[in-house]
Image 1 (tube, rainbow, N blue to C red):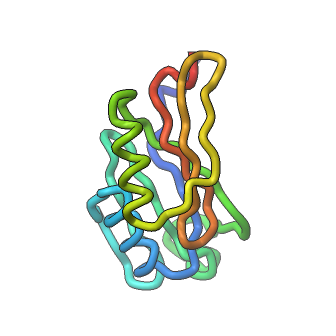
Image 2: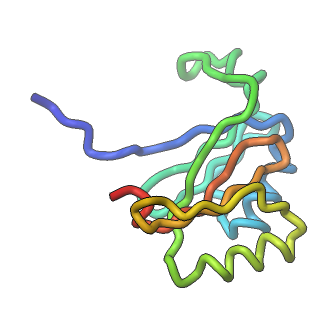
Length: 130
């Protein structure tokens, strides 16, 4: 039986591609991989891709099946245990409110915050999932 070997890409939906690109570059330190003005901006993270789309534009696509959603999405980014405090300080320095911090039963830790479009973003240590 064929098996899934991982997640290749994760998509979030935003209203303003330029604003989102700036946030993900400045706050998370991501580098733009590809961009189509007003439609999408893509970031490569390790072996996976983070895709930010303008839902209005992707619903009218003729190159891939139409897709899009309204409301807040979620993505979690893996960070090293020893760097969680540095991330907290970076978020505070960028005036990004921390919504919640959690220590999981497994010992993993997460910091939750929002992007400018309300998507729930999480910085999580690798031991969040046993």
